[in-house]
Image (tube, rainbow, N blue to C red; front, side):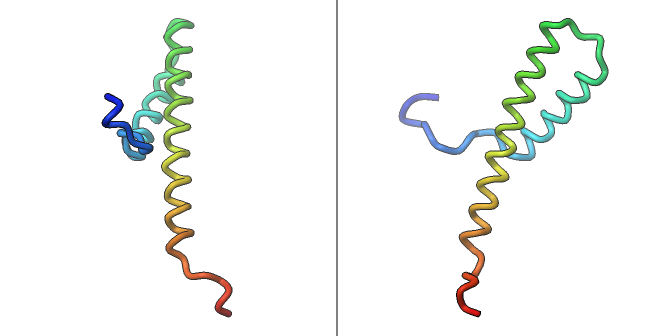
Length: 73
């Protein structure tokens, strides 16, 4: 990505990240990987988990902003 194309939002959607994370977990649970492969998958899983959390946090922020204020009671 060039500097002129930088955005605060990741290019991977929540659904894509969640699906890839599930695949990473399946591969790790299946075993048969070298230590290096397992570590690389674990690291990718951590990145994907962080990305999913980002999307969930953004959704919470948007919901909170759209919710009516509780002060009106």
